[in-house]
Amino acid sequence: MELFTQKLKRSLQEMYDRACSCNNGLLSQVAVDRGVGLLEKLGYALDLLAILPPESDGLAFPCANPLPRIISLAPQSILDLGCGMALDAFFCARSLPCLERLTGLDASPKLLAKGKDLLFNFPAEARKITLLAGDLNSLSCDPTNPCLFQPFELILMNGSFNLVYAKKKFFAELRPLLTQNGTLLIYDFILTESLPPGFADEVDNWLWNIAGALDAIALEKVVTAAGLALLEINELERIDPVARCEIIIKKKNGVGKAGLNGWHQS
Ligand SMILES: C[S@@+](CC[C@H](N)C(=O)[O-])C[C@H]1O[C@@H](n2cnc3c(N)ncnc32)[C@H](O)[C@@H]1O
Image (cartoon, rainbow, N blue to C red):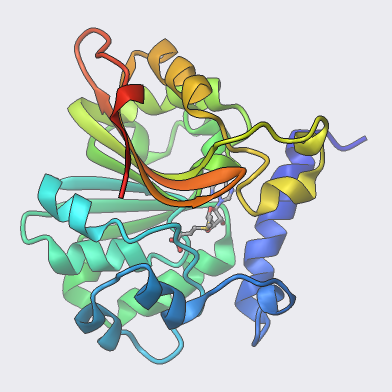
């Protein structure tokens, strides 16, 4: 019988691959925003959106606009885990003069192919960006994966963290990928209430980032166990039983003070 984790992985890949080949997308029957309307609503800069080739924004599935935070951190190297069709990767390369290299990793070959098509139009930005197929659930399994050899100043996860099944293993594998003092920047949902018993046993409940959500205390525990420090949880929008949040995690010498007091509402 197919294991739950294998079924989850296959379902997620099929869902995002399928989104690339349907005109109105697999989401046409689901009440979620997408495309340029979503990006505008999340506050992506209009001048960046204006330079995108027609319809290249239709496969954007971000949780938030990470650009203001990333620009303030000014990293020279970025790893975008769950990069989708590489819109954030492209925007970072376009907006950060200091950026030297950015690696985007995703499980959907079709989204990655769309990302490569997008970058074909922007050779200056494309030179800094590498797109890789990979699995967030086994970051350290592939010895040929260049991610393993050069740590990054910033790791971004815009809408992909709650799709990771085994968070403890994930953080342990992610830690070596961050430089000393490096930052992990997550945009995803945090639980504000308990989910019904058995909710996380259904693969479908994982697909939209809810079943894999942690509450702030569980997140702090798993982050700290990996030798990382949870600095801030900034609430962007409350939609009980979850809140859409920006989560800032640092790699530090020793374990920093956890950031539950830093749960800010904006
Ligand atoms: C909500 S989308 C966010 C995509 C992108 N960050 C954006 O803002 O458009 C989640 C992404 O995570 C990817 N993903 C899901 N499970 C994954 C896994 N196990 N390994 C790698 N990528 C995964 C999906 O293919 C999808 O591109």
